Length: 432
Image (tube, rainbow, N blue to C red):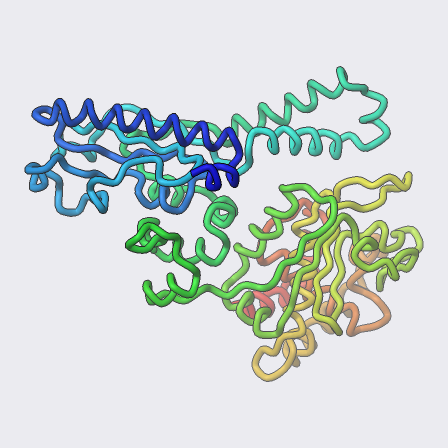
């Protein structure tokens, strides 16, 4: 036992021991009152740190011997019926008495939940980092420790308001998790297992008969389900949790046909603090179609490398003062860069951004736009470049971003919709 304990933090050992003693004592009470207690119900913690075995057992019931027939046939049973917490080191689960098996689904009361998978210590580190990122390095130093506390508290309070709550006592971990955002399900289960979960696979199927968590291949074979398409995402460097999650949430919202096509084309996303941190050779260079006033790659949040088929995304850009600030519309930028990759895919025998119908419609609308006042043309100059192919590629990327989500760039997008209505109709048709 000493060797086993040596491999577990003291806090985990103490928690496990206390849990074991508490549940043994609780079982003794249940046994002594078996004439009124109809069974026991496994109760796990509703948060992102609960283990696979406890997620699967939550809400399962073990009837008192001789009263098995009282439990509704469709209600999940604890197997084996004598299993009790702790299920593993650091286990936080418990069991509660059930007095009426027939009415178990109508159990009164509430249970708390925390929609987070981090420890309290890690959350505090993240709150501090997010508060610092909001004000910038210089202002953070000027504020001092006392001045920073309200900013950190504001982050903590906002997180608590959004992620701490209560649900009816009869709600199981499986039922609770199904109502959480995809990004949280991905964090708890892993993206591919979460995909199977969203297809209807119950959490108690995620462990085998000896309560060992099943591997992804084992789950696929046992369930007969197939994984949904996805593309590789590599996030590195000093970025926020929200940036990483936002990328994955944006990809989860993509039409499955688009994601499958990008996966087949081996397109990848590389994300980091900035574009030039990902590709230092771009430093000081100007993106295609940008003027001197627009700036350089340091002022840009996204790029697409057609040779490598890499989508590059930076959380931060340089402002006019040369300070690093968060990109205000980075996930629209991500969709724009995905649009560049999508534009290279074949639709009806040719790449989207070279499709004969789209070329014809775009040329007509460009000609009409050039007859408009210079002020109107100036707003859409990015799509009126001398290089006709570059203009169409940027239009396809922007149109894709507009059609697959929302954006804060409403003024430009409204102008684009008015000027290129027919071309956008074709893009919408291609997306279907």
